[in-house]
Image (tube, rainbow, N blue to C red):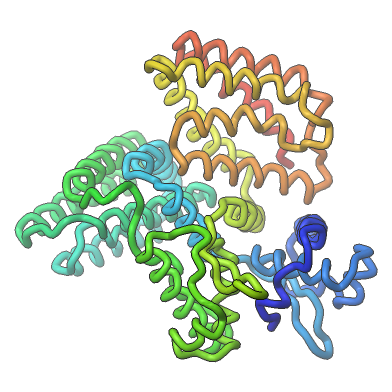
Length: 488
C-alpha cells in the first residue's frame, strides 16, 4: 500500500500529467466494456504504453484507484486490475461537498421535488411483484421502528423508489438527497414524544399512499402523493430545525467495506478527524497537527494514520503537507473528485440515453424556470443578462482547446439558480456524457456546431429575459433532445 508521501505528486506538472494519463486509462476501460478482473498490464507495461515516468504513472494509478476503476496489485502476477466501482465513496464525497458549500433545506427539497415524483411515476409503470414486496417490506420495517428517536432520520422508502424506477441516475441522486435531508433532521430541536409520534404517523400514512399508487400502477397519483409528502417534510424540517447557520451537521465519512483490519480502523480514524474539523468550524488552512501530534492524539500506528489521511485527501477534507511548518491541513472540499467518480460509476451502470434525458431534462428545465423567475427580482436581471450573454458567446469565441466551452451556458444557468445541489448534479451529467463519448470513440460536435449552439443558447436567453418561462423551457427541451443522438 502506498504511503501518503508516495501519493503526493512531486510537482504540479506530475499531477497534471498524471490526471491526463488517468483519463486515458479510464477511457480504455470503458472502451473494453469494463471487464472486471482483467489486468490492464504491469507497472512496466503501463509506463511503456503511455510513455511516462514512474512518478506520473503512480499519480495516475492513485486517481484511477480513487475513482474505483482499477486497483494496483503488487508482487508476482500483479498489475493494474479492473474493478467494479462502488457508489459509496462518491456519494460520501458529494455529501461532504454539499455540506461545505452551505446547502439549505430549501435547495434539497427543490431538487427532491424535481426528481423524486418522476421516480415514483416510473416505478409505478414498471413495478413487479418483487418490487411490490420490497415496498411493503419497507413499510413494515418503518412501522416497527416508529418508537426510535428521530423523525425523518430513517426514510428508506425514497431510495427504494429510486431503485425501482430503473433509472440509475435517479437512484443515485435520490440516495444523496435522502442522506442530506436526514442530516438536516439531525439538527432539529428537541420535540415531545407526542409530536414525534404524530409526525411519524403522518409520514407513514403518506408513504402508504405512495406505495398504494405505485402498486396499482397509477403513476400520476404516485407522483402527486409523493410531491405532497415532500412538501410536508420540508415544512416540518423548516419549522423544527435549530437555526445555527445553513450548513448540515454531523459526520459524513462513514465506515465502508475495506480489506483488512488496518483499513477499517483507518476509516474510523478518518471519521474522527473529520468530526474534529467540523467541531472547529472547518477553518480552511488550519494545521491540525504534525504526523507525530496526530499519532499521539489518536493513539494509532503510522500506517493507519497514513491510510486515514489518504481517505481524507480523497474527500478533499484535509491534506498532508511535508517539511517544516507542515502537518495535516484543513482543505476546502471540491466537487470534481465526486463528479468524476460518480460519472464513471454511472457509465459502469450502463446508463441509457433515455435515463440521461429524463434526469437532465428535469434538472435543466427546473433551473430555467428558477432563473426566469429570479431575473424579475431587483438587481438580478443585469447579472443574469451579463453572465449568460458571455456564456452564449463562449462556443465561438472561446479557445479551441477548451472542450467544455459549450457547457458554460448550462453551468452558468445552474449557478444563477442558486442551488448547489442542481449545479453538482448537472456537472455529473455533463461529465458522464463526455466520458461516455471518449470511451466509445464518439467525438462530440465541438467547434463544428459552435454557431448552432450559440444560436439556440441566445434564443433560450431571450425567452428568459422576456420572463417567458414556458418558451424558455420549450427551447431548452429541444436543445437537449438534439444532444441525445451523440449517446451511443
